[in-house]
Amino acid sequence: MPLEAVAIAIAGYILIMVIVIFILSVDWNKLAKYYSTNEPAPANLSRFQYGSVGMAYYKGSLNVGVTPQGLYLSIFILFNFGLPALLIPWSAIKKIEPANQLFMQRFRLYLTKPDVKIILRKEALEPARKYLVAQGIEWI
Image 1 (tube, one colour):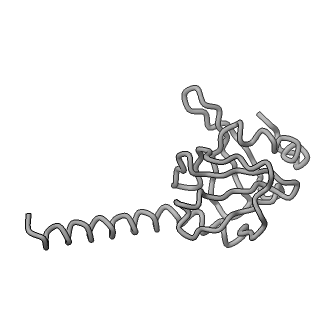
Image 2: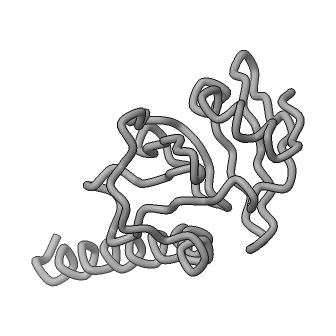
């Protein structure tokens, strides 16, 4: 294979990866407009969690924490591509419903704004139970 063809293939792969990363980060950026934070990660941060933010599924690269102010989300530093940490206030969560998958208990969170759904494992949300109940959100 000629060297030019290899260079074109590598450049094409890099371009495709940049486009995919951009598309998958759209929903995170929507949330960042409202909930971006510079607060340090909470002490109870659960690292390497699985979950979805909009269209993007973060397989073992999502960090989830619970504070009295809200739900803290960040992405493992090697995969965050400059996306900021989020602190979503409890008052911004309007509804939770099951989003179970096989033997995994997961919950889908609906926010007041923007229209981006978040799916997290039950274990990651368990510390948030008292804050969600205080907001009048039924824990399922």
